[in-house]
Length: 256
Image 1 (cartoon, rainbow, N blue to C red):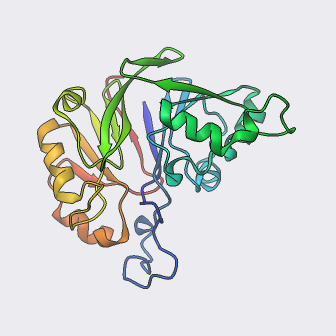
Image 2: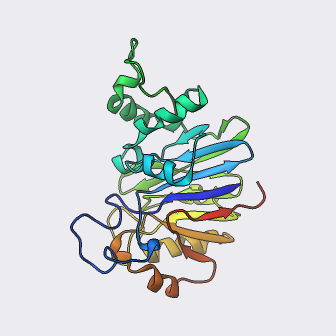
């Protein structure tokens, strides 16, 4: 399995429009963050996690032309605002895009992109098929995916486990039975918004507490805002086996 982090930033991205802090003005490319998204290549099968408003730029930058399925964590616009940019993938593959997520989230997508689901469609609209996810594992072709139910403040959202890879973003709470689903991971990607506590996201300390429970071989922090600090400074304070992710980061995941 090859993981590419397409975006590692929070809902406004980094730099934030109009901000003049040292992170937003940084020349280090690791401090420039598009909205959070990840891409998995598993043999011949390609899976995208979340499709935010930067998706077009992310696909172009990474040269992605084939996506077999889109896994959605939740319905906030920094995670579904780029679904219309699936269209060129439809045209290249001549296939419907299979989208997976909570039933509530599928309803939001159907509403926001209603033109893609009309009986008589305007030519050129995205070709999408919505697949509501419950508690049970499901398959994208022959790849088994386990949904992980977490909370984003009070909002139920999904993370995903695929073999020995786990992906959690925007979480502020993970129940014990869901934590158990994330044990024995090779790689964990988990959100860490900033240093100070936040009402609806793990901060750095809280993310590290989850990592300490799970003990994956490697943990990658994502969904970082500008107030987490400069990449060059944050990496100095992270424990062994934990790194702050950056846009374009690629990593192999063992034991698929």
